[in-house]
Length: 109
Length: 112
Image (cartoon, rainbow over all chains, first blue to last red; front, side, top):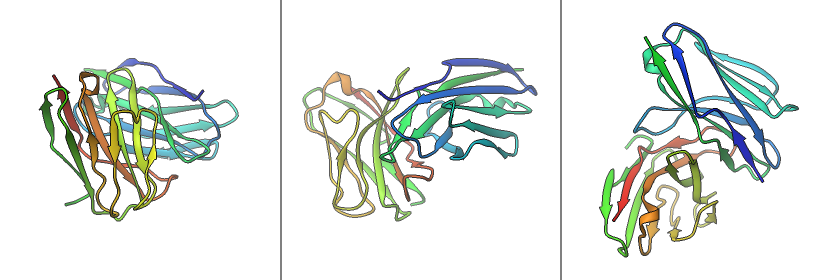
């Protein structure tokens, strides 16, 4: 079966750095997405990786290792507004998105 | 309209009633999707449409139907609602499978 694993919840301190991991087992691979979802709102696109390596976008970076079936989202200089759920999703061989259950990130002052 | 519009925002529905959730996009995206999101389970695909006139079943299609008469609209119908269909429903669209999805603001449905 297809499976995406990410931690259920993480806590970090304002101003710090946090890394949210995602491992996946899917039938084929055509890219990995990270989305941010604030409570009661729709998911919004953060990043897309299709090749191995690190993609940096401001305070957020996303890393992919296809051989390991592994990705992480790195958030730097954490702000209170970064409190949200972070969803990992993989596009399989049929170009369907397979979603992880999400990681709830709690930022403390 | 900018992006994807879903209606209603929320609804309380008696079990056994028929309900249609509306979804309209103005981005001319070919593909559209309906998801339900339940606590601890993440987003689960109900139905999808790769282009106008075609639809397909997702992971949890039972009890739901869709139609795609044109590019912009993708309504989701619950023929006879049951309490297990209580959820938050998101409509999404994409230009192609390799690019990000744009989501509507969601419909919170409670079946009692």
